[in-house]
Length: 506
Image (cartoon, rainbow, N blue to C red):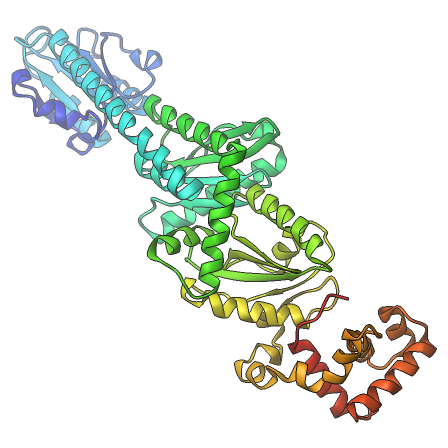
């Protein structure tokens, strides 16, 4: 709350009276000083209660106006005017000037020594400081529990509540991992977003230019750079209207230490956590999700509580195993919870609802794959998102990431998927039988030919055979399936069936 001029006036033992500047009674006092100097303002820094007997008060109104204006400009909390010595009452023109400036003008009666005011303020400030440290000792364990149970987002929320300021955690690339705004209106929220843009611009300029305090017209932004053995791992940004106090800085330092410790999490703890998250994710994909599991899975959601499922397909299960490690490392580098599940050649990943194709490609770290991105959903639609992601992956070409929602593909339509389901193995059974008996992979041959729009050179290169071999295989396929691939409708139907079925990547 702070120690205000109004609080001081409410202390009956001091018998203080407010003679002017009532509009400024909510000004906070950080100390009390005594001075009879007319130019005292040049020795002050703001927040002081200045006590004077008016011994050198200018004799004219113009001089008194300059005197009070200089004190108001430097930002003192108020002026205590002692009566009963040089002046029996507070001069009337001084009262008018104080009212005009909104600067509290207090009358200090003769029996009250200035030292009594200073002592009361010191006691009050000491009580406040003790209360702040007490709150800090309670906040620190709460912050520790938060990062253990909810990771960085929970820590950010706890720190924001303890400081009563907006807080954000930004990764080393300048991407916002988590943010909690204390702004109470749209305008305040926009100011917070502007402050975050400012911090991200500093990060883009270079890590060494980031840590410290930046004061703008609307914000005071405190940024704590967080380092680990590998270098900078992120930044804590605290956004408020005034600089942090000593206790607040202690809490920010504690939060930074917790983030550093989490980044350096012991190997066996990380392995156990990954195994638990994989199991929870696997159960959720089978439609089993307890309330506690929903809380954990919710850590992967964006600020709106939405997620998406990605399905990657790799050339072999061995490649998929390596990809799990790569994807997990990429998620961890982005300060994301790792929900990754491997099924043979397939790797299923839970990402944020606002993630796009570029993020999906980046998580794979350059590995050869094809992938599908499911629709944005809440946790209740997790299974459906996974199904559509798998459908999208089946429709992708080598190295492609398909988002059926943004491409507008008919394969994103449930009725189309239902109609195609099961046709793959039935319609293409003769070709699958040849492959299973050790013969040529006519399924892959047909797909390559159709995706090349019947262009022999392109299709032969994709399938990896000579064009004469390709012509021979296509003729064999036409006989086995009883179709004419010169017919456009036949080609379209077969391609849809191919895209709907399981198959190894090209």
